[in-house]
Structure formats: structure tokens, C-alpha cells
Amino acid sequence: MRSSRFSLESALLSTVLLIGLSYGATAQAVKPWLIGQIVPLTGPAATVGVRHDRVVKMWADTINKAGGIKGRQVEIVSCNDENRPEKGAACARDMIEKGVVLLLGNTLTASIRAVQPLVKNGPILFVPSPNIMPAADTFVFQVSPSDVHLTESIAAYMRANAAKVIGMVVATDASGEVGVASAREVFPKSNIEVRLARIDLRATDATTQLATVAGKDVPVVYSSYSGAGAITVVKSFRNLGLEQPLIVSYANISESFVDLVKDVRPRRLLGTSVASIVPDLLTDPVLRQRSVDFLDQYRARYSERADMINLGQKIQLDVVESVLNNVADPSNAASVKTYLEATPIQSLQVIKFSPTNHVGLDTSSVAVIELKDGIWTKADPIN
Image 1 (cartoon, rainbow, N blue to C red):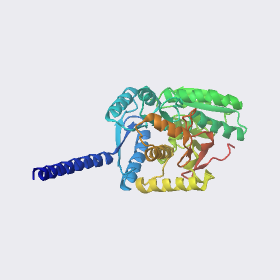
Image 2: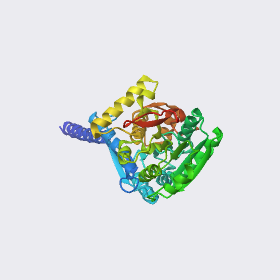
Image 3: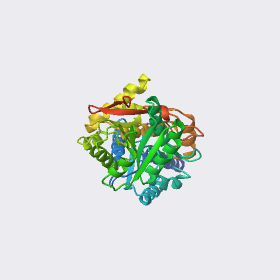
Image 4: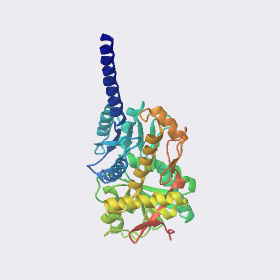
């Protein structure tokens, strides 16, 4: 009798333990993927940050409505760094402490550089900025073409048009200095003379700088500004009555920018962008359709056309999704690094990293485009 009672108690205890273990395993299985996002949602760079954030929200909603990834929902933890490096670093420390498995550096150059030393042991930091060009021995991966690649696309456009001089207006910040370095590296190789002028980010007039670099013998002017500074350059360009094409930074390939400058638009407004912003430029039908689908989805949700920032973020999130789906432990930065360096990732364009290169796109992914009748399309010749 005692033996029977003991057996019954043991069976009950075992059942309770099994239920507890099962509950614990289930709780662990449904723990969400914690993804950190450092992004400027206020301040001068908010025009960039908000566009990143829109795509992040759309992606997370789509993933979660479809049941998540490996049965786990995606949870985005966002921190507004206001494009202040010290705040960006504080955001990163807080997110690392919270245990994010991957980190999105959706901010500008100076803030990302402040964050980089904090992820030397992980987690993986993805950046859409073209200005970082992370070393291949780090846990930082840049999904966009580099500023050098963007500059090379301008040089190729100028060579095709036998143009030998370019005027360039750059900001006096970290991003501007990256642009200067790229220009000095790229244009001399094509025997293109650069006439350079710098301007403070807070300036409200750029006529002095443009008058210096945009003489009658200069067939093209390039402004590497983004945000409010770019609008200042465009207004001053129009006020001076300049006739040559004005090429603006990739960050300005947006409907919001076009709307802001619609009354002061130059005669010809050009820009640099990943080719997927104009799907017809893509020769691969699968990539072309992916680009069309994303542009349609974005317009359906936000009632406006996706821009270069949006597309760059979509590409970044496709890389994130691939990691979450295919790496057993995405919080293991070394495992993720190995996966990314060995695996081409299909997105709107194909992303390829390697053990010697942590920049996912190159010059072949970039196009010089032109605004025509409110639509960005392949740029016409200079003359």
C-alpha cells in the first residue's frame, strides 16, 4: 500500500516537473527577437531617421502578422540619438545591456563611429550609411554602397559625357569630410578637376560657395549634403540662375525633398542611388519584381513613393531576416559574421560580403538618375 502511494506521489511529481519544464521551454520558444535601432527621430537629421523608422515598422508588422521568424515575434527597441554621437553611444550601451541580438545603426556618420567601439565583441551592427566602410575584422556590416562607390558612379557618368570639371559643395561635418576624401580618391583617376567649397550645416545661404565652384566652364555641380542643408544649396542654385545639372546626395532621392524644392528646382536635378529605385534599370527579372513589390507595398502603407533611404533600409532588413532565419544563434556575433561573409543575400539587389569586405554593394549597384515629371529615372546626358 505504501509502495503504491509512493509510486502515485512520484508520478504526480514527475508530471508537475514535466509541465513546468514544458512551460519553461514554451516561454523560451516564444521569447521575441529583440532588435535594437539607433535612429535620429528629432533634430536636423530627423528627415533621414523617420524614413528609416517607417520601413523598420512596416517590416516588423509584416513579419509578426505572418507568425514571426521561427515562431518568434520581432520586437524593435528604438532609441532616438538626435544625431548626437554621445547619445548614440548611450543608446548602444543601453541596448547591449537589454540583450538585443542585432543592432541597426540607422543614424549618421558621427554617431555610428561613436557606436563602433562598443560592439567590438558584438552584437552585429548593421549600417545603411555609405560613409562607414567598416573593416573586415569587425562585427560591423554596411549594406549600402560606399561613398567611394557613389562617387565612382558620378565619375563614370562624367566620363561618358566627356566632362572634365565638377563643382562640389560639402558640409563641414564628418559626412562632408568623407565626401571630400572620396572625391580626392576618385575624380583624379578620371582626370576630372574638382572645385570644392565647404559650408556649415546651419547655413541658410550657399550662394558664396556656389559662385566659387559653379563657373561657366563647370558642366556639373555636386552637392553631397543631406537634409535641410541640401535644400539650402538647391535654393541658392536657383537664385544664382545656374543652368548646369545639379547632382544631389542619395539621401535626397525622396518625394519629401522634391516637394520641398518644387518651387526652386534647378533646370535639371540629378542624384545618385541604388539602381532598384528605378526597377527598369535592373536586368535580373527577379530583383526587378522585388523592387516593384516593395515600392508598391510602401506606397500602399504610407501613400508616397519609397525613396533611396527606404530602399536601403529594406535591403538592410532583408539581411537581418536572413540572419534570423539561417543562423542558429543570431546573438553569437562570430557565427553571424561567418554566415554573412560566406552567403550572398537576395534582396532588391544582391548583397555580398566576404572575409575581406564588409560593404555589401559596389559601384555596379549604383545609378545616376534624374527627376523628370516628378519621377526619378535614368539620367539623360549632360548636354
